[in-house]
Image (cartoon, rainbow, N blue to C red; front, top):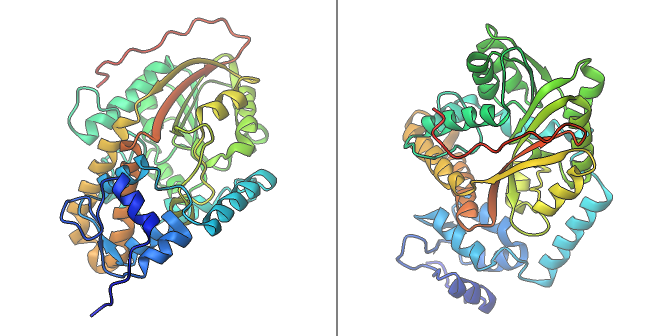
Amino acid sequence: MVAILPIPGSLQAIAAAADVRFDGLRPWDLRVHDPNLFADLLRRGSLALGEGYVAGRWDCHQLDELISRLLQARANRPLSRRAWAAMAWERLLDRVSNPQSLMRSFRVGRQHYDIDHRVYRATLDPRLVYSCGYWHGVDSLEEAQLQKLERICRKLQLQPGQRLLDVGCGWGALAAHAAEHHGVQVTGITVSAAQYLWIRERYGHLPIQVELCDYRSLPGLLTQRYERIASVGMFEHVGPRNHAAFFRCMAELMDADGLLLLHTIGHGARVGGTDPWIDAYVFPGGRLPSAPELCVSSVPHLRLEDWENFGGDYVRTLLAWWQNFAGNWPHLESELGDSFYRFWRYYLLSCAGYFRSGQGQLWQLVMSRPDSPPVYRSVRPQLCV
């Protein structure tokens, strides 16, 4: 029988503030299997929480609600002097080094996007859209993603014959939708070899060119400007030291009357951040921007035309992804194993909790060149399917 260790007072206080109980009976309570977890939580915070879940040291039935409650109670702040020092050191490294340098930019592709493709087919909608859906008046993930794609195209005011640059094109859903339904020519870039090959094989019949490269290579690679640019779910990998360079690059590639749509997760605090577990195991080098960071870095290069927040829709999107994956798990279990199941569950549901807490937001910004005439009109929420 495992000896029961006392729960540190600081953890008890945070749990009480979040209305969470250790070994309670409610769906969002933690059921602790290893009492040594408590000391680890004090030392390493959310990193220990994620690693502990994947290792089976604790369980929770309604994981997304647990994370939401903990974040609303500010449980993600450091709980010891050692944890404070580690956070301060990481922030200092972000200032003096560049975790998102050009040499490191392909790491996230290899670690996250190039995993067994069956995982994404089991998780996502048929188009493999790996970003937040737009759940306005629709009930299914497929409809929400289609509506999001069409909404982006309408915000960009796409016209037949235009050239669209898709920066961080994923598995090509936006490029294909824009080419098929709006008659544009698309150039997409990705740092994932798996996504690059998928687009070439699946969408070879459409006017889509795909390049395996980082956005910083575009000025030397491309010889033309684009009437429209979209970047969906990629800016989170740019990093604050490179924000200004990103917007400068987009401005250089944009036609005089062009438009840029930026779709990105945002952090509600004044300074953006990334959960240490997500940084270590899911998106290495990822940094979520804050609203002030976006404004300061973009204003010298582009003019803000529109800013929409629909972060609440990411809760429904992530829960739908998890339901898809859980339903398809019997076909993957024998090869991927329980550890991956727990990893993927913690990743999706902890992110759902992040957005449910209000700390996580989802922004779509539309920008133009500051020397172009101010003629843009916002697209009202409406059914776009």
